[in-house]
Image 1 (cartoon, one colour):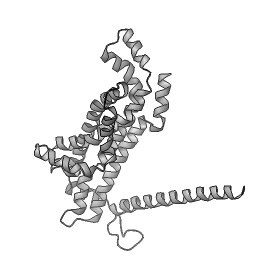
Image 2 (spheres, helix red, strand yellow; image 1 turned 120 degrees about the vertical axis):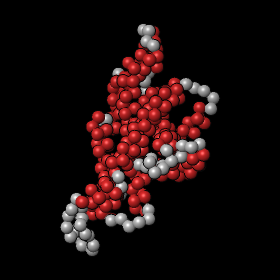
Image 3 (cartoon, one colour; image 1 turned 60 degrees about the vertical axis):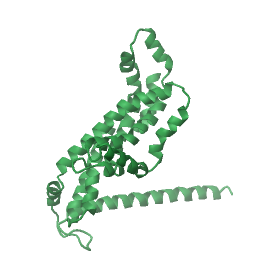
Image 4 (cartoon, one colour; image 1 turned 135 degrees about the vertical axis):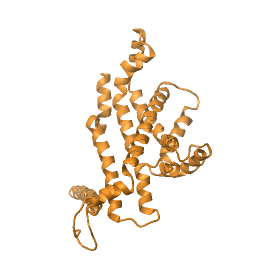
Length: 279
């Protein structure tokens, strides 16, 4: 029995590595297929394309107006990130520091947009936005994306705020710090790791958010992911290579922002840094 247990453990470890390797190989194979197709002149039934070209990127840029789509995407993403910080961080502070009747119900309401599939509340939300005149506008897209973004910031920030000893704030008050100075000089440096982690995830989540943006976007407020969907399924004949080039642009946009953010923030060290700052 002593030898069977290590064999079982090794079997499980081997199985985990095999499944993980299979997933990674398939993931890179799909990405490689799309990237290869975006540079292919013609690719039918062969291991490699008949030739290589970069014209599909120029074609996609002109046909799908990628410059306008990227501008709209960045405007929506930055607006959602900024508003999520302005609304979510103070709300998280109030929920972490105050006890009041019905607090658990409020926390449950904040959890719902994260637990429920977006299309479940996206359809009635889009109906309300269109009736109020915000549907199909940039403001409507931003408002729809704020519904899951603000609760996400709140839930990420609450543990960071609870780790800050209230005596630090009390000491700052004793020495005459106003609310503004308390926030800028005491709370903000301690909350910065958690805030950056939350806003980083909101940024990537908003770029990839399809359902809510699709339901509320109009011709002038489509983000890149929604335009990519229309390029694939809308009426008309489009070159597969041109659509693949658009998909590569979308993938690179998300990847670049993620790399830039991770250059300054390491999510795996957020809690450690917050604890070190307190000590």
